[in-house]
Image (tube, rainbow, N blue to C red; front, side, top):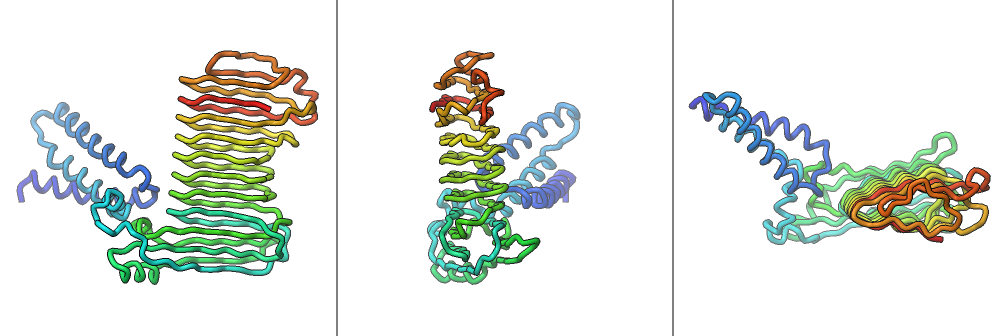
Length: 356
């Protein structure tokens, strides 16, 4: 084996091993093409810099080997979803098998913790007037043939745990699908829980929407990507919600609220019946808020955008910054108001509108 080919093969093994370790810990499917470009571009830059620093040395084989190993590890850890997404694998993209896994039980606790992890599908949480919970997990599987898909259903593994700790009912639903096989499945979760309980949630998805409906919560955490976050009549002490490439919408209220997305609109109705702080961030999309016009509510607002405008259609505002792309203002007598609402928001390439 020549020195050049030896360096190339060694670099390939290093790239393959290092990439496999790193990429296994990351959610790659939504940015796979970007990662391919980053790796290829980094290889070109590294090769050029090394040649400039050491003109007599030949690093092309080494760099190409490392890049090749990284790309192969990227394909392996993503389950080759780049190719299936392009339709290169023919009918592999079809869901050919489906099975629903039901979980239910009696509820005697007033406090409930929901922890759910899923991918390529939604999580929907509803409340009802029953002292019981119902969680339906619908699994759809892909395959080149019906039998392939059915075999994938048979291989699917899910963990559900119900426990009572300190008077709190804990419901945990987790999958055991490795990152290399997530492209084979779509997981759809529908939850019904008692309306008279108080909730803590830790809901995690990727490539799927999450919705909460008619809930009272303590701390509500929602995390997804490429999926809408929606709230219908949700009240909590704290709400932390993150998505990307999708909008956040609905009506909610919490003293401490942080909502983050990108390439998606934030469209909210805020009842403003209790004092609270709302931190809202997006990009390449608008922010639109409908707030209360009640006389006992005061606002402290700092909102900005770029390539668009900020419009605050509220009465009795005193401005410290009043520019087209940024406005900072407070309601006259803000410190004496019974309900004090602080709103900070930023976006780009999208308008910002607040009205009552």
